[in-house]
Amino acid sequence: MAGFLFVIGICLSIAALPFAWYAQFKLEERFGFNTTTLKTWMLDRVKGFLLALLFGYPLLALVLKLIEWTSANWWLWAAAVVIGFQLLLLLIAPAMWRLPQSHGWHVSNGFMTHLVSSLEEA
Image 1 (cartoon, rainbow, N blue to C red):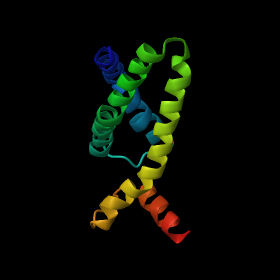
Image 2 (cartoon, rainbow, N blue to C red):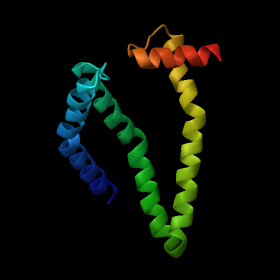
Image 3 (cartoon, one colour):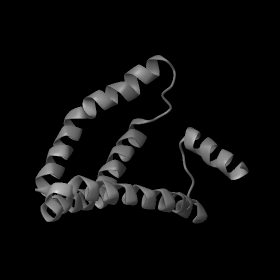
Image 4 (tube, one colour):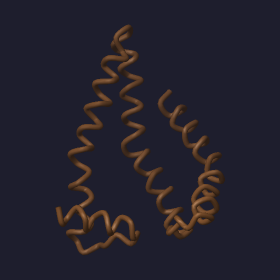
């Protein structure tokens, strides 16, 4: 069941790609906000898919198992698991963000570079 829902999500994401492209490259460009290249945009989509595969699919499978195991109170257990997962990511994300920088890799997006430098100054 989790695989089916994951595939449906991927199909819906693929169907939404032209709209996301239009929003990024036509609307934002019209107002001068677009600083993204097509390559960066495509890499962001691939990274999003890989993160969904790595984190989203197991979380979805766990929530569906919780529905099976806990019947009437499934929503309470599922909420606790999802909130716990989000808190865990909140703690892990800054360390994962620093990991590439500690190895000499640099963020190429101007906004993210500015964001990182402003965080370092704080």
